Length: 131
Image 1 (cartoon, rainbow, N blue to C red):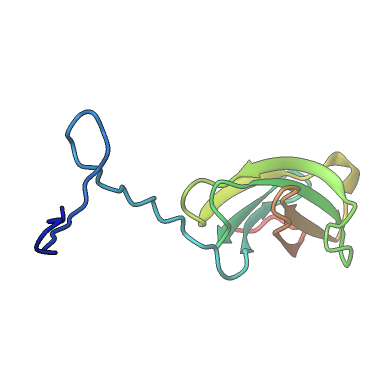
Image 2: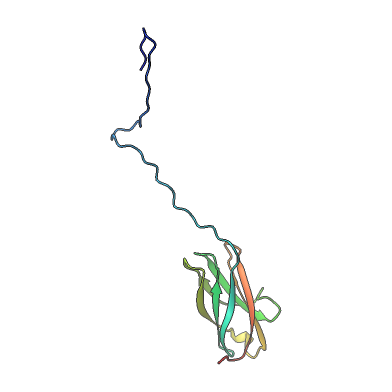
């Protein structure tokens, strides 16, 4: 508003909407940023049957392919042994069957790798039943 004779003026602003409501910006939810690297330990083994692992620091909501192969291969190009999907927590305990092709192996490499995010972790174990 401005007076044409005195030069006095005033100003303000408003939201141009038909409801009369003010627009309150809603903050977008913070997306957690993954840091670190996934890793796992061998929890137990049943010879020529299964291996149980304890995973830590895996990225949330990701899918992993599990492969097993001879010791020293890091599980790269190994035999498919299952899949694992992480939830919201990066820690888990799960069991995978040892592929029949590895029966009688002395040591076995195991690898979890994500085809989408590229994250991976690997380890190895003796193919002996643990107490």
